[in-house]
Image (cartoon, rainbow, N blue to C red; front, side, top):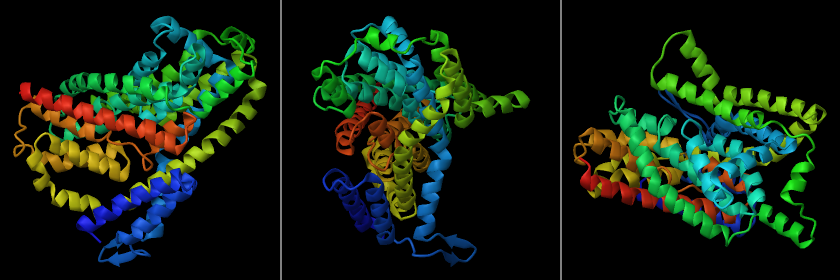
Length: 467
């Protein structure tokens, strides 16, 4: 099957998946896997591997296996190490040290803004998935420290991370899109444009986070309310005192800051095209797995400083129990993305690109949004759309570096529209934020829609004045 009928089937499949998860209460792992299997078969993926000359067309079982394993390869260890760092920060009281420092810097009255801006800064060199896992302990501690809605803090952190993830190099997606569109020598322009376009997205997501936080209650909020109702809620000072010896502030920051700096160094080395042993070493320590491995070693030092080394085994065991469901749901999302990529959807969109090009600056946005919604990965949407748009730039009237940089921003805005069940980030945010899938649609999915629409409108306005 191909063409419009396949697009219709895809839409029906997404609706069915959402219905299974939110209404029938079927576990997301089973729902996503079932939809992936059925859609793959309807989409024309063969039952078994088929030889076509020198090429082998993978069967549905092979595609599912590839999608499942690829997710673990790309993000599995990162999630485990990031979660372990977070768990150690919680157990040792390091998260409370961090919350204190943030509150003192930003102020008690603006915790939502504080966590959003922190996410925006962190995700410039770090993937948003990893960034959320790393910063989640701070989010939880800060929410408790300031009696702020957990949902508001989750949405704000997610939005801050997501904004720089799609807009600002050296994150792989925007830097790849810029190179594809011929701006490899104008990355500073792309970085500046990304920072500018981030502003309306951050403003819109901040106000939505505040609004939705008053209307949706996560399991974390429910636990806090129950404690308050039972009058067993400890004051922040009492809770902090219950940890006994707290780690130093600089050591509490180190498991988070050092991996971020390491990944930033690796990104700079790659972007600047450094060569030699020093460059290889920078790229090695900048690999997310290695960077977070270093962060984990530093986190273990927290256990030693607070005399909790005997708890290390139990902390690791608890981390694996928490992370397990997230990993498997994330892998299921990877399966769905791989199945979609092996159908004819992307080819159909590519073949009809010239028809869509008549909408001007909105063309790269719409194309990227379709691909993002279809297969889940913002990076894939950025890279694929850039490849399709590159030969069409003259036809779209986009020829100067500034105009092409705006096209990169339009692609990036589409690549955040929208995050839903086939996006690993959706499950990281909802699970670590203590929300159900249905609450995830009302928070993560809606905020990414708002951010994408606000961003492309701002980009369109800029295109009227910047030449």
